[in-house]
Image (cartoon, rainbow, N blue to C red; front, side):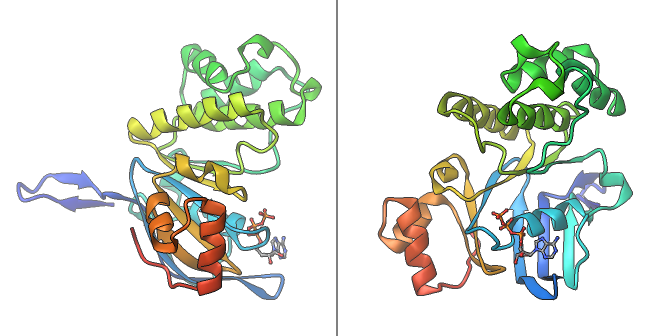
Length: 253
Ligand SMILES: Nc1ncnc2c1ncn2[C@@H]1O[C@H](COP(=O)(O)OP(=O)(O)OP(=O)(O)O)[C@@H](O)[C@H]1O
């Protein structure tokens, strides 16, 4: 969707994601309840909360693969999951989805071809996920952490405008994690919007803002420093616990 400027020219909507009054039921129980939030373009937003709190469900709503009970989910000005968004929104699930019988390079090449990207993009992306020296290895011979990175590369190579990542750094060593976060920061600086879930708080400082979920409800949408200020805790894990205790109501940053 576009909005008209004073001169009448169209310009892109400034929000990457806008969610209003979202309710989702899974397995007969509420998985998300009355969630409303907005995410600016070119930002990194962390999605945090205990196991089962609804992080993956919220990401599925943004990607458009989740049946929604009520509410609206708008991505880049269009209803989540609509056809024009397919090449503009990338999603990396917790389960790596790659072809095990072909090489890393061929996996990434395949996805690059779907998005009209060339060999330069393939090589750059494999480099970005730290797998250049393994590029010719069959995906089936890789470790779990390496496989996750191939999956990530397959999503990155399409250069989506919105990138939704479900726990992308699980099982990675600290050096690789730091490198990946640097890469995410450079993607955000070039205008990509990232929504990244984690159930560990030590990665939250890489994010400009945090969505803190608990039992399907959004407890807060705040920058890390605001969370510290609000709770009086410098450690983000402790700050989240204070927030849970106080059950403060979510406020937009
Ligand atoms: N396939 C499913 N069928 C039924 N209920 C489901 C299904 N997947 C998730 N749920 C339920 O939906 C709720 C939210 O789950 P979700 O996977 O979104 O949590 P999460 O925060 O991503 O958890 P984790 O950190 O463990 O991945 C949970 O109560 C879960 O039991």
